[in-house]
Image 1: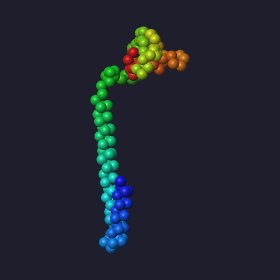
Image 2 (image 1 turned 90 degrees about the vertical axis):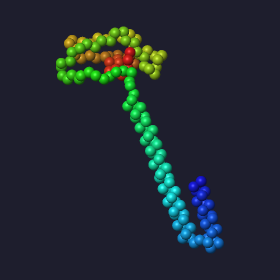
Image 3 (image 1 turned 45 degrees about the vertical axis):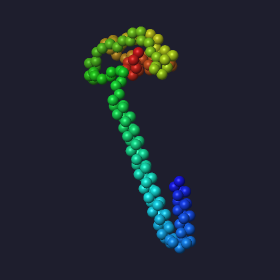
Image 4 (image 1 turned 60 degrees about the vertical axis):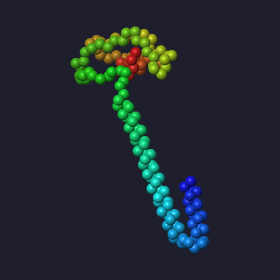
Amino acid sequence: MLYGAMAAVVYVGSILYQDGNITIGELSSYLFYMIMLTFNFSMVAMVFGNIASVMGASDKIVELMNYVPKINCTGGDIIEGDDVNGRLELKNVKFTYPTKDDVQVLKGINLSVDNEKNRVVAICGTSGCGKSSIISLIERFYDP
């Protein structure tokens, strides 16, 4: 529509020039002002589009800030050094990933780690046996 309007202005301006009602300078200055005005309106439209994008993104940020996770991962003190004592135990843990309910990754695994006896523990197995899933469960990325 913009280029059609500009073509119409040039056509009408050429008719007015042939009739002697306007000069070439007046026609070209009018076209220049029209182009500048159109450019300014397009810049304003782009700014309003950016403002709308920012408002949409801020709405998503507020939604993320108000999100309450199912797994409570707050609390606890961080203890540094060798003073950490405790026991980690998994009893008959069965697990499937939320996106793959039909594939059971862990089928009743038992694991016990006492740091008084076992200072270093290695989880070994073939690819796909659940090593990373066990670590994800211990780190509370998922619940069993």
